[in-house]
Amino acid sequence: MTFKYQSQAVAMPYFIAAIGLFVAQILFGLIIGLQYVWGDFLFPEIPFNVARMVHTNALIVWLLMGFMGAAYYLIPEESETELHMPWLATLTFWVFLVAAALTVAGYLLVPYATLAEITGNDLLPTMGREFLEQPTITKLGIVVVALAFLFNIGMTVLKGRKTVVSLVLLMGLVGLAVFFLFSFFNPVNLVHDKFWWWWTVHLWVEGVWELILGAILAFVLIKVTGVDREIIEKWLYIIIAMTLITGIVGTGHHYYWIGTPEYWQWWGSVFSALEPIPFFMMTVFAFNMVNRRRRNHPNKAATLWALGTAVMAFLGAGVWGFLHTLAPVNYYTHGTQITAAHGHMAFYGAYVMINLAIISYAVPILRGREANSEQAQVVEMWAFWLMTVSIVFITLFLTGAGILQVYLQRFSDTPLSFLVVQDKIALFYWLRFFAGVVFLGGLVVYIWSFFIPGEKTAAEMPAMEPQGEARGAAEAAAG
Image (cartoon, rainbow, N blue to C red; front, side, top):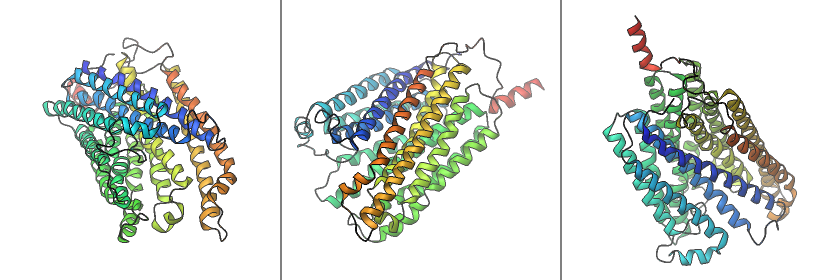
């Protein structure tokens, strides 16, 4: 089997780079996990603040790489036309990759203040804020890459078939680019700074990124289940409507304690409490589509990743988000390890897994096969369970640490100091670290699964049921 549109091949380097950066992210996560309990580990070569910047920035960049690869793969297929400018997609890939590599090198090799000075931060101050630590020149490069990417995708959609999947994906990608512009707005007043900072950080991960998630999930489910496109599209409409309604106003749950008006405690609490609903709908949607499938796709691993995405996104972003989203609870829990627990499972469930799902589905096809061999898929499913179970334990260990931290440091009649409490919850950090090692092992197994020989070729594949409208046409012709 070969992929239908040759320009889809530009997605492959994005997928490869995404996985490489994923490995780097986990390695630096293990470094800072160990530094929690062994403070001098790799000091002063890699201080905690630098390792954490690399960990979080690598996460953001590899997820964006995965989204871009997914778009370059699925948009030509959805639009039924070749990509508008394949060469531009290749060029922007290298620009993005080199910019990311130079930025990480800058974090590791140059003091942050010096990095700010030599990259022109004094001309347009944007650095020094969590998750937005990138030098101003890197942010400008990201804007250029994003504009070229949106132009390429947008022109492809305009000249081809318009589907709900492609339009929802395009809406999410445009929102991603627009809300990133708020990273350039850096008011001197700290309250104003935090107020607008969340317009990038929250409205990405709890807003427009969810549209990207929904579109990619819908595409994968259409391909692996053969369920009529109209049914999946109706579900997608409802899910994105609930996502935007709850996610946009739900930004207010970050405004509780930063000096904003008191009414945000009500708006933030009510709407963020509703945010689990679209994730629950996504879970029901995924399982419903698989149960109603009209074909048995040979790529069982991709189906497993798709189902896992829905479940883990609901648990991480929905359940663990709700645990500390109400203002009276958040008063005690904000900035504790409970926040870290929610963040780890939410990012893994919602965005890591959907990227792994589209990579699992698309890469075998880009290599000329419908799916990897059964042996390779068994290994990949082991990787799924190793990573998923370990992230569950990481979340539980961080939740236990957070609960104890809240009680000892903030709720007790005789509260202890921060560092004393950190020493008392060190056991949870050790357990989290060992679970992280297992997670890294699962990631290695995932990568290994793509190198296992013996994949089926198109000639060796059994004839497959046509899907959706194609099946109806085939039955009519047979009749």
